Image 1 (tube, rainbow, N blue to C red):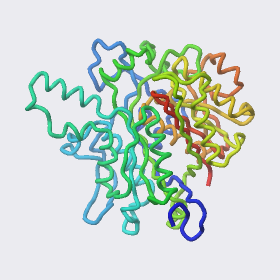
Image 2: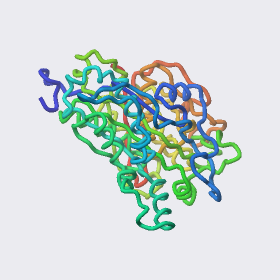
Image 3: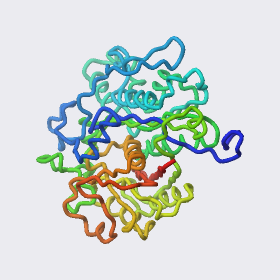
Image 4: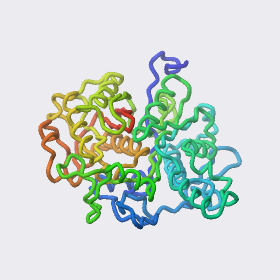
Length: 440
């Protein structure tokens, strides 16, 4: 029955049954979460690219990532076996952002326990949506340099599949035999939050029972860093990279670029329950909106983001006081942090009594198109484990944030039962997304 749980007539619920991540804090979801709880920064001088002459030479890179990492074995279809992320020959056909997506996607798939019962899972009911902000920017730069130096004959035939954003979803669907809806949300820094929210809607309306959903990004390099530096969006605190990302702090001066991927298995609740799946939590609310205000600056008072949060609450049938944690978009930029704090304070008038707010970008940096997914995963785990990650480097709270009376979870993680957690993602062009996860 489309749009309802089979045999009950009740609306279809969406739960999370698998998680995976590759981040500046670790090469798995668990390692990334443990590092976030400990308050560790992923910022350091850039090592993967030659940054000579760049105005900014530090970022939150994924460290010690091996594309041929052993995994599985997974057997998603008869006669197939996946034992490593990619061999070197296949890896050369894909951009770095796809490598990250494959690793996080495989981990989420393995974590879900679905591989053991794949013969009972209809591939046509299992889809994939990996949000991406910019795609293969470094690969574009590399091939353009080859073109200028050596001519057209040196362009690899794999150039286009290396760089187009939807190939993260495409390559995962090919590898894991996911024949359901296949798409890529591309909405700047909201991309992967939208990917999760829209994937949940696909399940709710009955077009799939399972979605592998999340986001990926890998644009740390001369062009990506140079572009954001030209906008004066990046922190210049090169003498102490680990202290550069400082959301809500009065001395913040811009964000630190990050990279990585986070992927979840979203599953219709009855489908998960019947197979005895471990359930991390439920995606209960999803809101989205537009500022219609400015290319890169948030609307005054965070009005647009506030509407996305309000919609998420309404769709989840929740009262503001039921939310115990907000993972803020909190980029560490001068304007955005205070605007978001004001929007939260308006929507949660008693927030000082029941809310903790933090920005994990203080540790991961800003993963751009993948930010929403990894922050959604942290929000989900805060509900699942009753632990809230901190905002590190928050030494002096901005007065505009302080006047809200909210607790921004400075420096140290907090143990607290969280029934519902909200995650915000806002992007250039004034696009906003809010997700709410709850206990099951």
